Image 1 (cartoon, rainbow, N blue to C red):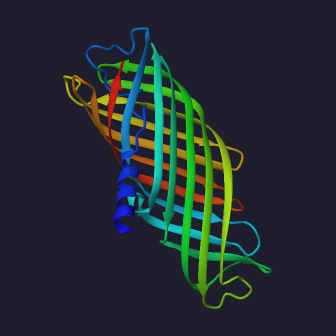
Image 2 (image 1 turned 180 degrees about the horizontal axis):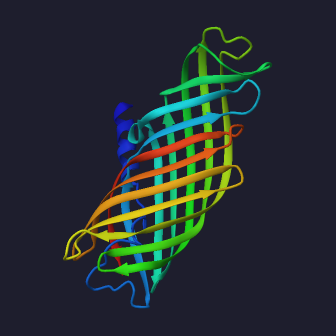
Image 3 (image 1 turned 45 degrees about the vertical axis):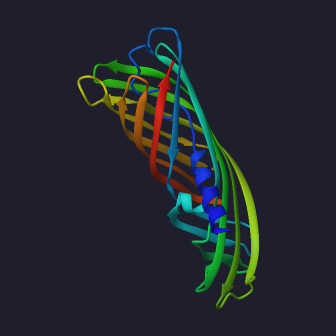
Length: 275
C-alpha cells in the first residue's frame, strides 16, 4: 500500500505541467521575434511544489472552524493537473492559466465551533482530516508598456475563477459541550475576481541569456480578494528557456464565509518554448 501511495504521488508530480506562466516576459529564441507583428505563441511546462495553509469556517450551526497548518504539497497531494498558454501579436498578448489540485491533510486542528451561544474557542484535542479540491482559472490580456535592452514590462487585466471544495472529518475529546464529538462536513464555494497586474522580465546579462521573469496580480470579487506573485531566474538556450521560480497564490474571504484563508507558496521549475 505504501509503495502504491508513493507511486501515485510520483505520477501526480509528473503531471504538474502548465504553459505560459512566464511566457509573456521570458526571453525568446534567436529564431523567433515575439514583437514582429505576427502571431506567436509561448508554452511553459513546469512543476510547482508549494506548501499550503488553509483555514475554513463551515458556517452552519455546530460546524467547526478548521485550520490546516503549513505542510508539504507532495506529501498531501492526491492529484494535480495544470495547463496554460499565451498568444502574442506585437505588443498585445492574451494568456490563460488553469490549475487543478486535489489535496488531503491530517495536520489540521479545530480552532472553534458554533454553538447556541455563538462562536466559541474550545480547549480540545482533535484528530482532524481536511481535504481541498480546487480549480483556479485565469484569463487575461496584456499590453507591453516598456520594452528596451534592460527588459520588458506588461500591464495586464482580466479575471480569475476559483472553484473550491473543502471537507473535514473530526474526532474530538475534551469539554466540547453540545458540539458533536465526531462528524464530517463539506462545502463548495465559487469565486469570480477581476484582476490587474504586471508581468515581464529583467535581463541580467549582456548576451540576454540570464534573465529574471516576474508576474504579480491582485484582484477582488463580491466577498473576497486574491493575489498571485511569481519571481524567477531564467536561462536562454537555443532550444528554449530553463526557469526556476518561487510562486505564491492566496485567497481570503469575509469572516462569515467558508474560505477564511488559502495560501499556497513554494518553488517551481520549468522550460519555455516559443514559436
